[in-house]
Length: 348
Picture (cartoon, rainbow, N blue to C red):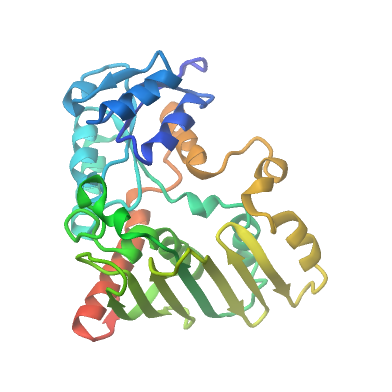
């Protein structure tokens, strides 16, 4: 292995993809080679910041560039499987934006292509690496919260109607978004819930459209039971003007932890009642102290782009692989099925 080699990187889709562009350009082991989008204004904006980057309108032409070894797919959710599979079959490694796809069936096409081609596929679930998640996962591994009893998760955001009408109107549609407030806004927190609390046993849900003209939903409310016996409530909305909070709260027989987004709010553990003050000082401001408390590491999209580049260079698996990313999609599908049928959905 050539230690000096920099992995050639490209980004397809320059909406949220701009964060991938900046991360690849700043990568220690990667080199931003090219970007692809249909809009000239987006392409030109990247070119103005990174003059050496190659610009493409055509995905197929980008795939022919041998200098591109890995690519971020940052297109509407319903296109993730199509373009990820095409990239894999063109010999590229892929980092795919969330969610992996709009259905488990479509997501499995990505996993099948990964196995068939032998290329690497990583997924964007960057909230797993928010600063308070490090001590929380450690506390759970050490059983410091005791037996988990209850989780409360709430994504209380706001989106104007223009959000759903813009960019061709793909958001909030079943075909291209796979859902609304749950599948688009809530999917990160849904992933955190199962990552923190374990395997799901059953889901019972209500959904509705309250503040928008859309196909899917702008509110979900679910009761989720886990195989451990713990229960969680999980709610999402894009009607909570002006956008309130993202609650991630765990309660066990040995303690309670409450987080809002990336900011620790409470840390009450029986085995060390005096620990909270220090924890709030370190983690109460969230990722603002990431560089200080996790020296040499990155957070957000930058972490997962760097991780993908390193996975290619050092021949290891990315941090979040397709089968892991599909867990949140399975739960989302169960939420929608329960709301549609009025019945509890049980997992096998």
